[in-house]
Length: 68
Image 1 (cartoon, helix red, strand yellow):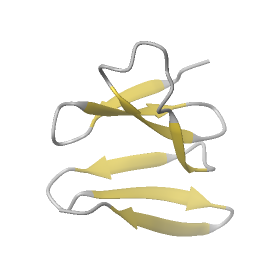
Image 2 (image 1 turned 30 degrees about the horizontal axis):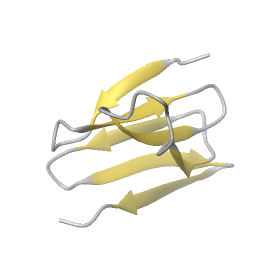
Image 3 (image 1 turned 60 degrees about the horizontal axis):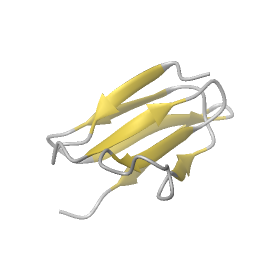
């Protein structure tokens, strides 16, 4: 069901885009124990320069800024 995978800026994690959510995963986690949903959205884009995930929630553009 994975639609797209986007690298996080540290290159040790990825955003996994599903049809209904976006999850954050430690790429070295082969058993998927740390798969964390970060947005309940089918549309999202990550900007590594601002370390921000942009996603659509209903009719609203939302952001999730990750710690530097």
